[in-house]
Length: 454
Ligand code: SF4
Image (cartoon, rainbow, N blue to C red):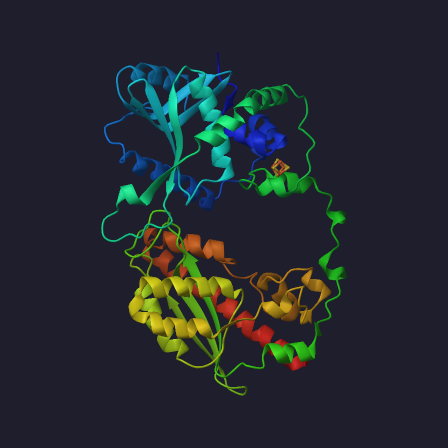
């Protein structure tokens, strides 16, 4: 029997019946594939291959097919009697085809491992492991355990990768067993969807990003009637500053005033010594300095080369640029503080200087939080993101004309830097510097705008 469902489409169904249906019958309505999602997919594949080295000598049942197919199922069935370790072992039951990344046989008992390029087990991993267990056990496999093999957030790379420490197995067998009774019902529900004449009528909501961002979001958004949203220009742009509260906020500030922002990059598998899976590694900063109230604005910046570990040079320059005195303003300080605290652990020789910087950081975002409303405008629309606050406070300054307009893109592009030719790399450096420069200039202008109004 041809499979009706795969593990992926089962998970689409668990997220949203409409996504399941659109994926099956209207793939053309999907968002265009972007480079970032492809890179995430590639990371998953690379981590999967790396994990196979923990169980050497296995045979891959998938062969050269792009997807698991009836051929993979047939090859798996043959391999089960021949080898003790199978990669991409595929099985089919009740119209569902799915594979486990690594299947180990010990005597009559099998142990399944599903590799995930994350720092722990997430709810959706248990959900798809439950489906795999259902299919495998109904093929007569005696499963002794089922584990998610994920990255170990505590692992610190020193020298060559230590795979036994990089990966951490977590058994999900008991959760998977609890879910078994629901699986046939879910499968039956999804099979019924296939016979629907029309696209299921489901409104967008929190589920569109849980557990993954849905790739039909553009289509569903296009269905929402535009008039439902109050046009931005109808919101009142008046800025109201609670002057006593603003004065309290800044009463302990000392010049020079620093306006500081990091950009960071994360690697699932640590690339550099003294780094962990998915650690936020700073590769760039922008710093604007107001030496005193009258002083001209100064600017400093650091940007790594995309190859070497950027942190040692960045730390040294940062310590020089930020000195030992003066208030450091950031937007959402928990991020900058978190990065600095990790730098102090990984580079203990700079701990004292880094912790001095850490102790001088203040959050310019706080007065804009609706709960504090020290600075308030209806046009913030309840948001205190700098991207929302800036156009209201300083309409003449905008991210619109920049090639890079948000941190996720900056991080992704930095990761691509060394693959680029010289000319494109030079352009990318300019774009990254321009983006981060605007982040801190925005803070300066917002600060000055509030100061002028009090
Ligand atoms: S965008 Fe949301 S509502 Fe639309 S298909 Fe995806 S998950 Fe379903």
